[in-house]
Length: 587
Image (tube, rainbow, N blue to C red; front, side):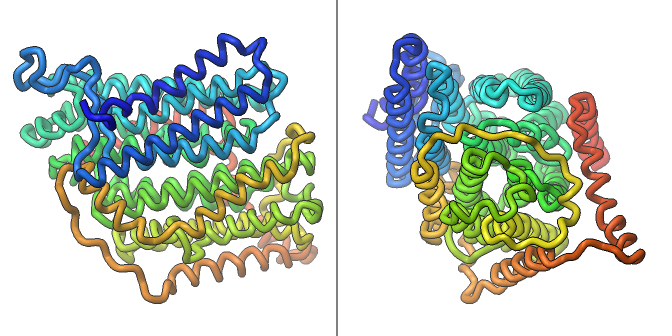
């Protein structure tokens, strides 16, 4: 066994072991030691995963670790694959490294935030990190389900940490909807194993290609899609996300929006690519539905983000919208679409992590997360406003870094049809929403509030006695990385997907535009919309009041759907599952 193969499980065992150790001595451990240990582990995971990605890239093959030595053919198993493997291809290991980076930034931001709970925050975060690492690196479908559950359980506890009414409600909605997703995923695992007799993803792909459009495998794909698209918050499985992300502590929201949901979509992409992509009949059935879901998610999330006044809810709905954009890239299953998805995942996670940290700064120092109540109060902390403004411009399409590169690739993948306009609409409106809040809070610009005035808000604050510079530093680092990381990552991502899929090479990527007119247009439109919204005056004339009511109508309808009632969310999950099934059955 080579050194990379030997060290591959350490990416999971290290955070699991440290979580157990900290828990054992949590009542006598000084808080700073727990902070340092958790930060050191997340940095080590990031570096180790990055090294594994470079090894896999250089050898043009994944780094494999078969637990117990049960590799194919071992112990007289013939052609059967009985063992469980970790499979570090360049993309999976790269995503793992990114997750380690985001956890490191979150630990720095949370420095001394949780001193009074005996290191339990660090324990839960390390378990969460281990779950995400296992989810990214496993090559076994049942193992994927196990890590999915570990991620979910840690996330439930982290969401409910504040123990207020809204936190418990948000955590309860999160628990119920994701538990249903877990049951659907377990059902899919049973169907696949019953039909193919193996749970190794690569081997499953070979067997599935031989069977053609098997009804049992199609049912498994529908259940897996519903389960993982719930974790990825795709319409209509998305309703839990804003409730959970808005009430969780800010360092936790950084990881939720920056990594957890996009990793859920990454898991779905991995299954599509490794297991189902070789069966053209199944892909032909599923592709239009996934494309449509991506477009609808992008639009609904953008509208809801524009209609919010609470910063964390605004950012949470923005995350939903951007996940819709990512799904359109995944559903294309093309070189540009997959590469665009990987770049977008990286760029979006960096930007969204930084923005949630700015929201946390305002909750700590401004004692509110309400955009309207914070009017002009951010001037004292203007560097945070610079970070937030840059984040808004990046979401709007500023032509720098991996977020822009990913969107450009996705545009190539989906063409210039309705999906192009849905993605552009989402880009403009989510960027405009963040810019509007930035100008209102940090520049003191505001007219009469529009549709956001009637949105739900929350009276809350977070621990204030933390150094501003220590909270700002990780946010500034993330936004700087989002801007300066080179566009050449696209070529590396394309090669990584070629290794992941086992194809050796994918189709050549389209070159970037000489002048990014689309990006410049979306940025200009976002600035214009944000500026106009801050110039509006209170409607006094009859026709102006009528127009204001008409403007609010679609937002009121969307708020009605996002009721916060778990029974409604379960119904929408059932509707989504039925819709997916009916679409494929009708085809």
